[in-house]
Length: 325
Image (cartoon, rainbow, N blue to C red):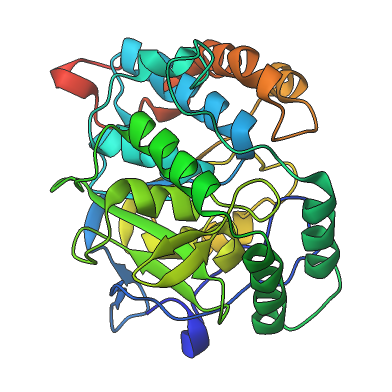
């Protein structure tokens, strides 16, 4: 298993935490890495898509990119494995369940006919960043962040958060294919978890928990325990895609926490990293929780799809039998 004491590659915490130390932990689901006797990697699956954290704005950019690629005949959700963390859990859930991505063009709740996402608490977020930037042992940092999150537990806000996530991913049922992995962190103990279709957790709740960054959203209660953002496990969590022959990583926050070293350690034959170009980065701005940036970020992602399609032309199967030539 590529975590804990196994020596697997782990990405650093993002969210401008100031920390470059990887967070290690255990998994609920099994992730297999096969290594050949000659030192080469035996690929256990053909393709994997990893979608990283990025807050409200990063969600919009990623889904805009995926929507634009679909229009060009490329379905990112056609991977054998999808790993979605935080914002990536929202987009990964929508892709894996085949949702119409066009409805992401308008922010959830802007029409007034649905639940609105929780309001961010800048002071509490500042407390979290202070902990993450203090150079604490990873386990202790997660526990302290978890305590900050538990102090802000709000059942009503939690229900609203899960309702918003359900509206976006469209269902509580996990897809049979592709396999979808969603990491989170148990707030009380600081222990990382990774859920899949066999974990017995409703999809919308898993997505809500993985995208619940303390100060931006309340912790999510599942099975009597509270869970918080999956990026606190290991940033983009690229280690969960070990064993893929072709790996596509979408990183809205790549400029803050690049994971090139971790990617190189995974043994994929082909790695494509998609992150905001200069125009998209300017549109996304510096506040990942800015609700006013949703529509511009979605459009920026969609506009970047043509360039992304060229990057994927030789490595990603086209959607619906279309050619990428």
